[in-house]
Length: 475
Image 1 (cartoon, rainbow, N blue to C red):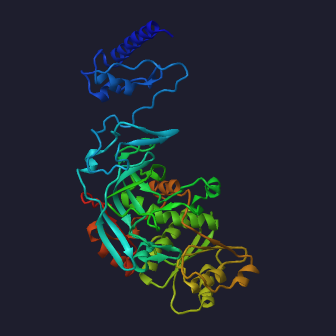
Image 2 (image 1 turned 90 degrees about the vertical axis):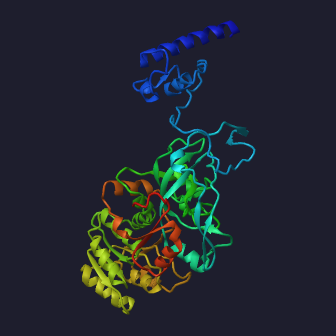
């Protein structure tokens, strides 16, 4: 194509743009109307060019681009036309020499990403974080705020629950083979608001409220291919050494593992999706369905969400056992058919009481404590052909009546975190099929994290929630 032909096409294209603007706005100029008015009623694209982008070019009095060549895919629509100016000065760039995006071939420089929710950042340089340095050594420290990578979002954290694993890392500096060898930010039960998105992110925008799934696969290995990415040995997981968690003011996370919260789901409910996911995964592993009779050993936070999920999945009877009477009262309030207070009985004596309550043996037992005697009880209590699901993690080696399970074909299944649970959990919360709000018994601002951890370690209440946004301490 010669230069004269190019000029002819360009002139025709500019005339076409002028005509579209006249059709949409009633004027050939964009300055008479606010941007939202100019876009209203506009067609999705003109000759492959997205109209909002075209209008933005026109409003800046820049020459309209040439029409795309035949076969060229349309330009992507802008994600946030109303975004603020430029990158915030206190963000720490991971590429000091300029922002870059990974693609096919060498890294390419790009313009600053304008998709920022500047108001949400509120000109803060404060990123107060809860950091464990070793056994018994928990500190509040100010960490830098990094720009999100191409597939990440920067989040302003709102609510983060304290998990038993957080307390264990603080008290002991390790859980099994996971050892704190360097300072690590705690927290993995979390929700927050998107304030900046990476260049490749398409599913989220600044201002979106999200719940965070803390486990992100690093490799597309055999476990990812079969949908069980939680078993990937290289998975990133918040607050599991050496990976930092999200108990802080600002945090970067993979956008594909951040899930939008419906308007009728609170930030605290969003944070509680993490423990709720453990209950969902356990009930799936156990095969809970309509008419199932279920025994839940332990009425802590995980036992409580397991109770809620089992009832939501159709269990007709659920018995909950615990050594704490106040927790059993809460379990009764949350829908337990029966509760049983454990004192100093032997596993077989406990089973006898369970049989009396049920009228028979449960189809499924979900053990949430990790205590050896409770594991033994779960095996004795389950009916022949039933299933025992082990959630609780205790000693590495325990004594169990394995022959008793084998000759009655009682299946014993483990649970390691969860996978593919966030969409179901969000649906349960949005439809009000489950109510996790009563589980939160204590709330602390982030500045009082040490006091919050002491409260959780004493076993007071059920779930202790830390509020990371100093301007919004609401649920």
